[in-house]
Structure formats: structure tokens, C-alpha cells
Length: 493
Ligand SMILES: [Zn+2]
Image (cartoon, rainbow, N blue to C red; front, side, top):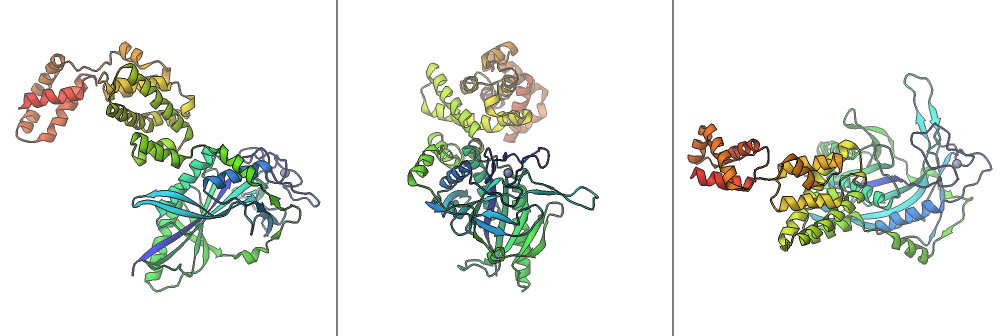
């Protein structure tokens, strides 16, 4: 019998706000001196009272709208009771039966086509503090800077069929959170945390398995994929050997590249949820929700769909561009400049423009991204103006510069902010398309490589590439490869 995974995700997204979820302490959990952003509310002093942060509420609604969730008109908070040293109150304020965001749906692209992932709900809650275990010490320390920071817990239906889909969904979620500015959603920093539920069912079976394994401690997209793949293998082997699988929680160990059993899973009964008596039921009117809906930018998935239909970008490169809002905006600015250049240069062919736009996407996702990453800057901070980027692409399109030389030009533009025609002029990088000039080089390369010439003449066509490479090198990357190819073909006949 073959088995098929059933995977659902529970994601905790730290929401960026000025103050914490229920008090006025700064929401600044990373990097500062421990226990400096705290007050009587977030440290659970008797008699202190929580107050709901409206900014957190609005940001949760924005996130919910982006996931096509129903937004509750009436929502309430509940106490989730448990003991842990990083939770001074002995309970966490969360939402139980009336979450701020109800069911929703998101589309992801799979190799088999688009699929819908249903969102069960998304609710607001407060984060706990952090325990620090100094190496070799007999004690642990607690830092409450993070206690009370707003979290949005997003729960999906068990709609994922592969680890890759789960990873793709998370990357999509990160992109949405960043577009909206509601979270930096950095997994390594714990802004975005993911737990997964996974079980196996016989291929084609409709009903869900009677057990579920929860996997925790996955701190990167890579570990989510690896942990799920590990569980698929472990559970399949157990089922094939006739063993029953327990409902349990397992932790992913990056070092061991394995999941390890932690404890049997609690049900919600164990938490003794009850309504938070210190907070009122909140009513959110439709007008406010519509107001927030108007603030939604074009989201990454929508942008991708538009880039694909308008410019014919392939999904992979398209996603690399739209994943960052800044890059998507930079790309669009370049495209609009590119259209200007084409009209100034009187290149009317719409095919040529489309081809050049796709070329722009490849450069943005390729060398440009590489230069940005290497220097740790975003597209907005670069010295390369979209206008100059577009000029370079126009020169490539007109065959005035080879792609090899263009790499050198772009790198220099990145360093100096100079415009490409100046750089090309100064460094003599203009592409040589003149057949007379190139013929001399071609003949010399042929004379220097008689064996290869013989091979080509004997029918080994792929050896031509070697000769083209030699001519390109001899011309210091300036030769027009198409012209070189034609010359070689003619002379090799
Ligand atoms: Zn506080």
C-alpha cells in the first residue's frame, strides 16, 4: 500500500507595532538589554490591567484580509492557562472561540498547477518571554522583553501534500507580511515560527488518519522542508511495518537532522480556556474593515499574476522579483523607463520590448540581486537609477554591447552610479559587430586551433561553441556573438 502525507501548519507571526499587545512597553524584543522593555502588565504584577493595542488589531485585520479571511465583527480574548518560567502570569491571553479572523483561502502554485490552501482561522495573542540557558550554568535566566509582544497565530487546514508546498506557502506568507509592513517575518529571528501537523493516509483515501504528529522547532524554511520529509519517511516505515503511530509532539533537531519525541500532545481541554475577564468583547464595524481593505497594496501573488500576463515572465523569475516589494517596484520603474528608451530610439516592435522586459527581469533576478546581496543593500539604496538600468538594457537590445561586457558595466554602475554610455565609452566596451574587424580574429582563432576546426568539419557541431568562446575572449568580450557565429559557420563550410 502506498501512503500520502496530510500536512497542516500553525504559524506564529510576530506583529510589528510601537507598543506591546496589552501594555505600553515598547515592542522591541530583539537585541536590547534583557528586561528593559517591561512594565507591571507584561510582567504579570497583581492588580495590573491589560488594554488592547488597536494598532495590533488593525494589522491582524490587514493580514486576515490578505489571506481572504472573514473578519469577525465581534471578537474576544481568552486565558490559556499553563505554567512556564517565561510566562509570569501563569496564563497567556489568546483567543479561543471567537478569533479575529475566520476561515480564508490562499492559492499556491504547484508543479501540477494552482492549488487552494484553506485557512482555518487566525487569532491574536501575546508572546511569552525568553529563557536563556548560560553554558555550563546550573541556572536559567529569563528575559521578558518579548513577553506581551503581539502574535498572530495562523492555522491552516491539512491541505498540503508535499513539504515543498508547505515551504512555498510560508515564503508566500512572509512576502505578504513584508508587503503590508506588519512583520519582518524573519524565521531565523523568530518573527515567523512554524509548527506542522503531519500524518500519513493510504493513497486516495478520503478520511483523515486517526493520529497526528506535531513537529516543532523548525527555524528556517529549509528545516521545515527537511523535518516534514523526515516525518514522511519515518511514519511510512512505521505503517509499512504494521506499527501504530502515536499522537505526539516531536522537535526537529538541525544537528541530528531528525525529529525527536518530546511529549504526548495536550488537547485544548488541558488549558482550561476561559474568557479574559479584564478585557471587553470587541466590536469591529464593517466601515472600519472596508477602510483597512482600501489600504491593501497589490499583493505579491497578484503582482506575479500581472507580471506573467503583461510581460510574459516565467513563474520562477517572476517570483524572485515580486517576493520583495522594493525589488518589484524597482523592476516596474525600470520597465517604464525601458518603454521610454524604446520610444526615443524609435524601436517600435512590441516583440523587442517584451523581449527586453524579460531580459530586465533576468538581470534584476540575476547579477543585480547578487550585487545587492553582496553589499547588503536594498534596491532603493542602490546608485543604479532605473533610467540608467533601462538604458543599458536598450543598448543590449540594439546589439551595441554584448551581455558579457554588460555585466562589467552593471557592476561599475553599481559602484559609481555612472550612466552606462559613459562607462562603455571610457572603457571601450562597445560591441564589435563589424565583420571585417571580427573576421581577422576569427581567422586567427581558427589557425590557432586546427584540431577543433577539423572536429567541426568532421561533423562535431558542438565544438563551434569552443571557437566562439575563444573569439569572445580574444575580443575581450566585445565581439557580437551572433556575428561571430555567422562568420565561423561561413568559414567552416
Ligand atoms: Zn509592559
